[in-house]
Image 1 (cartoon, rainbow, N blue to C red):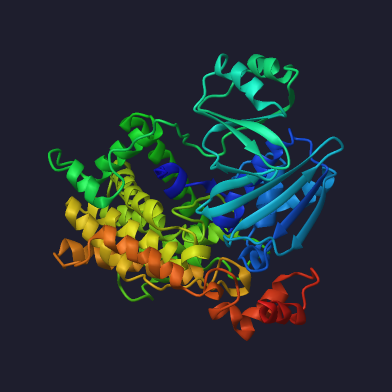
Image 2 (image 1 turned 30 degrees about the vertical axis):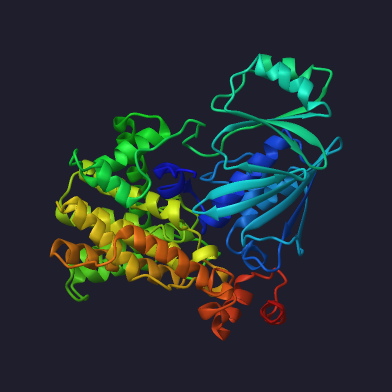
Length: 531
């Protein structure tokens, strides 16, 4: 199996935009497409399946914006992203987006055809949740790329001859022959192959082209990758004679997964926490952005809290303010950390940072809490999903709640078993949560669900600290959570076709938010009728 990284799959990416599944993932796909075309793209055809989630959400939730930014070579946190459509036009790239039956088996499937004057390539890729991706096909050949290796594609009609040369000249993790509409050798490495060596390959008479695709994830993989554990039960067995805390186990796991020292893991998380804190600070100052449904509500919440208008609950009210602030930064295209997703970016950081402030904890204590949360997220990523398109909002806010509950117990001085108990209870309480964004914007009911996830985390943390019995072990809860998620109807999994999304007010808001883009009430009605 593949082993999730805390910084790839769980706490990250650092990004702008409403949805990690849409914005960050599509940007990463676009970056790989750009590399495949060596930066020279003149025409792009993008196809979405009518039965998937992207057919109805690609524009409003940022897939188009992310793709365009990726085609231009930008990062997921680039401040120019809101203007990526204009930048694509200015770059002279022709765009064509179609809703076509491409027989997609995954709800977040991108089929992209790229052309310039000399060549044409086709890429099929998936957004798998939380900004993670998988390229599953290039030029008709089956591949599997997650963006965590250096990938080199050597196009040739005589792969065996080229293969003999490569085996004697480069260090690689894997080489495979791929055949589709053309044949290429797929070379996977953990370090970039030097330009001089690539030039030698290009000049081989059997080679027609060489394409180099750079990694798009912060933590790379390797063929010999092993981790000390990948389930909660395995972690407990590993820890039987060590008596490590949850955050220490997280550091050991990520140290093995990312081939870095535990100290480097800790400092990497410290940097992530500083970005989260900056989002809270920015949100509480007030945010502005035209293309949004909700305004800056966290500012007035804090004012009323300070005036004593609200029902007294210091830590809870601070959590609500922090969660709201982060969500508002996301909705105003500010920089946030998807933790574990952009749609649920407020619950975990808002809870941990607010609790840290209320309890007077140090930065190190908060980093430890976030590491503890990250390891719970690893177990979820490995055995369930963070994608609302696959598992509903329980996959996003539910996961964030379970992670936050474990973090709070750790920060409050609870033991390992209490942290696992809190995570188990918080996840159990989240089963069946649907994803039904109003007007196809990741704002409402997303804000409320983030706040609910955070308050659920606080309640479950205190219940665990008080010795409440969680009954079902965390591994079993995660397995059940995955099965429940797949049972949620398609229209309630981020398609904008059910729940609150399907109300008259939501449809009217969607028309209003189109901003004169040509959408009418009839267009919205037709979409619901067809789907």
